[in-house]
Image 1 (cartoon, rainbow, N blue to C red):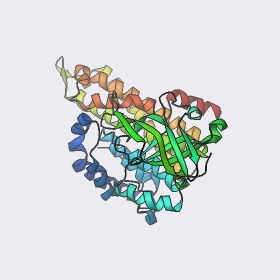
Image 2 (cartoon, rainbow, N blue to C red):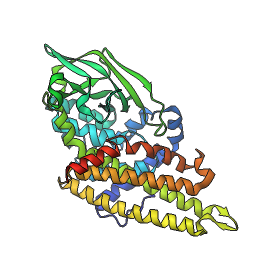
Image 3 (cartoon, rainbow, N blue to C red):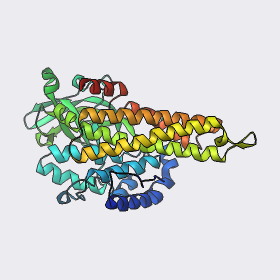
Image 4 (cartoon, one colour):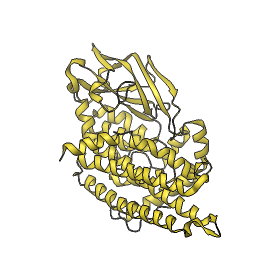
Length: 380
């Protein structure tokens, strides 16, 4: 269990909420983790149960069915989800997609979609990455050409989280292919639209319970009212949302690092070797002591970033630095913790194996570590 006694970002109300989250996960999430890993997708019933428990989109205002809470409640959910070693796509829905619709959607769009996202009736995704385009979003090839009162969407997207379950997808597309970044727009596409299809649920190294998919759009017609925000402003909207998206990833990474460290401590204290425990060896204690110091610093930094974000002061460079630091920390801790497990660490029956597998992608998605360094450097 996460020790939050020294945290500085949270108040009593957040800890009461955390207790509710833990109880919900203990009965509705943890018992099903292995099955979801095997089937490659989280049960739809879990989304509805999470909605009923108030764990979806808690920052959404009450007039749209939400709880009207601050982002720290999202962070509590993200921390506990990661500590449980789950890759369920709740943070994508709550921390990312919901804010796009809340900030840039019309009143009709907000009234129609947000209550259903809060309840878990609707699962969402955002489609940025393409087969030939990763971090360079200005180079996307998907198009949304206007024909009368409709947009006709064409293109392919890949590595899309929640791709198999999504009922609604925010599609990043070119409405003016000749205008570069100023030609990018965000289009809401319902999965029920003719011409939309899903490819395979991608076979990943880790995060196997997160459905990650290819999506295809072949002359998908949507009304012009499905435009999210203003035409040609999509790239700017994506940049505006980066701090919260990258902070969300940092939150998950930090909590996963703590779980990896806790697993290593527990295992080495129980594992006998040469008449004592693995923990009794100086190398083990020094390794764990070093990791503990870094994880401790990580929590302090995360609380700082959370407080900056709540105050509306967290910059893109600061959020990128948080994403870089915490995901790289996770990889260091997970890898060292697996090593301390010895051969057992390579066995899937031990939690450290899943933590290690799931950790690797966090240095890639949401912007690679190399891109994070570039963003930070530009602010110097």
